[in-house]
View 1 (cartoon, one colour):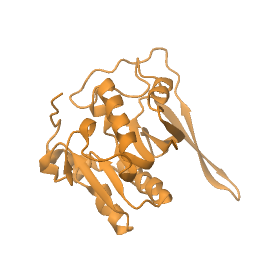
View 2 (cartoon, helix red, strand yellow):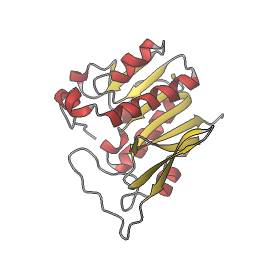
View 3 (cartoon, rainbow, N blue to C red):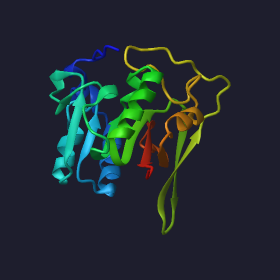
View 4 (tube, rainbow, N blue to C red):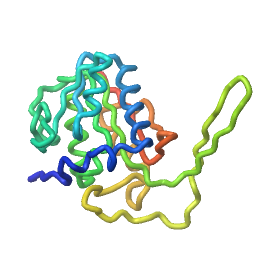
Length: 210
């Protein structure tokens, strides 16, 4: 399969790309990785490399992989054919990236990520289920957030928009299907939606011991 980039470098300009909500997701990216305390990390689809640069500030060694040479990745390769040995990286991560591949190709890519990772795999994906966010202040406990799914009578169909081939909780892609398809040969430790940016759902995996 021949891979082509979907957007050019200008897509990642600050004023167009880095909303406050996206910054919140970047915080979770760093938080999840630093909790693992890895020796090395491989990021798939780095954009302009913001995660790598921020991670370096906290002494986290990140290498990047992409098919677009304009983004100056450390490794230029399609995700489905990564030039690494098994268990090469303590952590492999991909943030809002796999939905840019047709679903079956995304599953193939995920399996390749599992092969390359030694300990953990961290991804985020778009979740189209609309929610209401409520905040309640509880004395001595502080402010607590509650995310409640909005009721809907019809599950929307996802149409390819030039970037996303699929999204969680669109027709044919319920969360239950994603959980089933993405937990082969790897254990799911946690999944959650970012309260400041619920469109982004994180998944934290741990490699099964063979």
